[in-house]
Image (cartoon, rainbow, N blue to C red; front, side, top):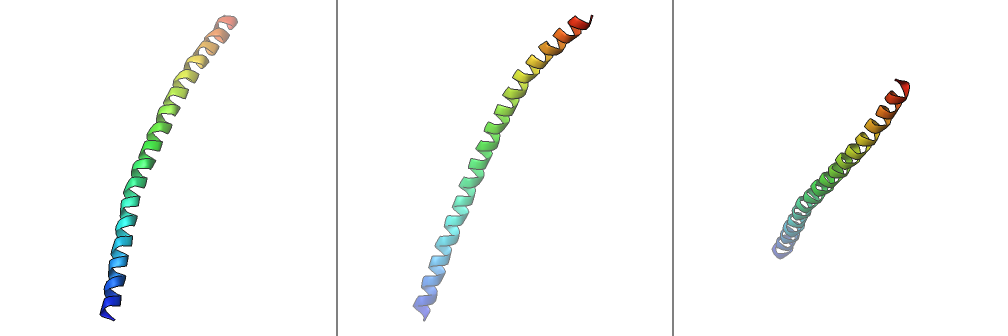
Length: 64
């Protein structure tokens, strides 16, 4: 009986340690994805902003 309880304790300890390690790796992966998405959004807004500025300037010149 004692060896069975020891086996269960060892199994649970190893399983919980693996889950904690996976959580840390997952957090890093999510952080990298968020950073990449932020870079893409900033680049898109910058390019779109310049195009919109040119469009509005063209409309303003046409109205004047």
